[in-house]
Length: 399
Image (cartoon, rainbow, N blue to C red; front, side, top):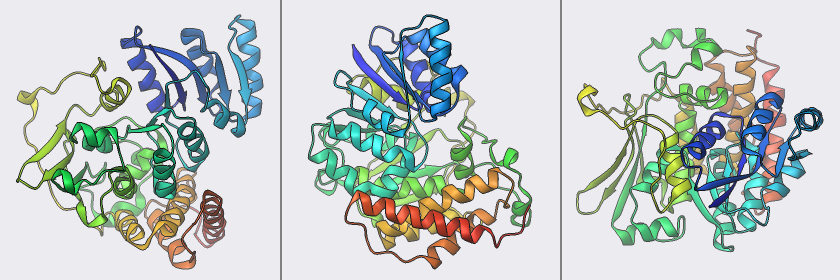
């Protein structure tokens, strides 16, 4: 049985991971669960799965959880704070670590899991966007293995030859006949809305994705297509390709999750229902396939499969991400930090939907940093970008 730690167990990916565990109780043991502040949900998870450890990033939430578990006589040890998360990510008797925490806060726990030689199931794009080179180098220098969870990255992974899967990020894709990688994206909920109405979009509307059920931050990123831009940057590091080998296309039906074009003219595509349990189960069971709990595609019910070019006037965040990727790692760190601040401000109704791209662009123009040479420098750039973003927010009219 594989022993599993889930970082972000109360979020969408974390809950789906536990759903896969329920479908395969003979294959997995939950050793540790990590969450932010959702005490009630993680208490219920502890009651069901009886992990050795539960960690809350918020210390007050950890205190409340400890009291609840004592009352219901669950012996799970409760820890609190960000340092505890990194420590729990490197537990000696754990085989897999699911990194399902959203945002830059996942970087240090991810590195901790890698350095301790875990099989790291990575659902966090921000770590790759800000520190792709350092993560890949850490994997190469350890016994760890990186398995992508994001549906598009996982689709690419599934379409690779086995020896490339075993050495993700290291081997030459060109030597294995890979010409380019095609990232598909639904276009989000506003693919057909008039451009003149985009500034009137509310947070509730932006969180209603037509195909996927996701957390708030990822839902907003999907609506702006920043999510696809972050995936574009992450592809370079995950699959050791140049940006010129990555193509982004719109595919509204969300049944083809990405493709690989080979030198002989073949195109390998991974298809499934838009259900995150499919890529999660593939990574958890790899190299074997296990039950996901998702229903298979019924092709009789699919009326059309269509593709189109993304319109940058509708998705300026996608263009910003592509340009940042071409500029270098410093620019991708700045963009990621600015976007986290912008999305949070939009969700708090402090700025409008179209202001997300405007703030991101302003921060990129305002801040110029040299390429980072260490993780410490990554955090320094990230911190400065957040400070600049918050300062520039003061110039935006209140919504």
